[in-house]
Amino acid sequence: MPREFEIRRQVTLPATPAQVWAAITAGTSGWMFPTESDDEAEGYRLLDDHQVLDWTPPERYALRAEQPDGSFNALEWVIEGRAGSTVLRFVHSGMLAEEDWDHEYDGAAKHTDFYLHTLGQYVSHFPGRAATYVAADAPGASLAPDGFTRLLRALGVSEVGDKLEVGLAGEPRTAVVDHLDDWFLGLRTDDALYRVFGRNAWGAPVGVSLHLFSRDANAVSSGKALRGWLDTVYR
Image (cartoon, rainbow, N blue to C red; front, top):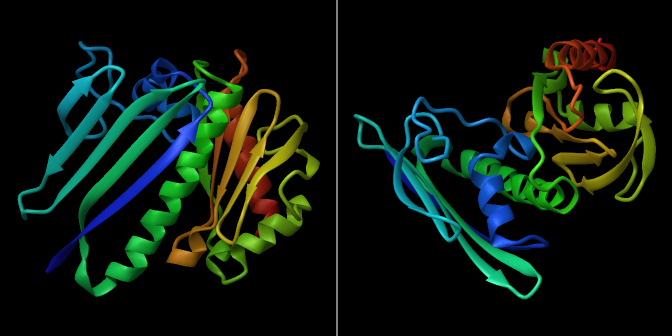
């Protein structure tokens, strides 16, 4: 039987409520992944088949999807402006398989923290800018226990604040490490955010996403360069 879960987080972001609202609705390609819908009449994009429960700009946004088996997935963002910043309260609830509940919950919770960190990077350095989104999974060899650390070694990453030359999207760029822990790596350049997901910890390949803010960014060529680089790391 599925078992319910709930992930609650609160973060303070260096942005206005309007900027945060734009980021979590129309700007998800800049920090998470694109969310699409056939219905954009109200200026928002739905996540998959989720129903909008609350659309109160720029204060509250809530979605929920119900499945025939009784399971559900629900997302809620509550935005509160403070002097010079915005407090975002986020709740993700739903159901996970009982037999793997701890494992799946751990992955969901840690991904939530990393996505919210990336949201902070987006509103701090690229507020309101449209992004070209590119994502790729590493080859199967990245499923090994050292899959994530192998990529870190290939990049020469050691700690937050490091500066290095990276060519994940093709032409090398100077990047700063904005996040590093046992599961995730964040790199920021003058015109992009690069995110690395050590999903081998949860039985999946290492994943990389590129959020490219240059107006001439090309998803096809950048994706080809990213996949080629991953192949060299895990050959």
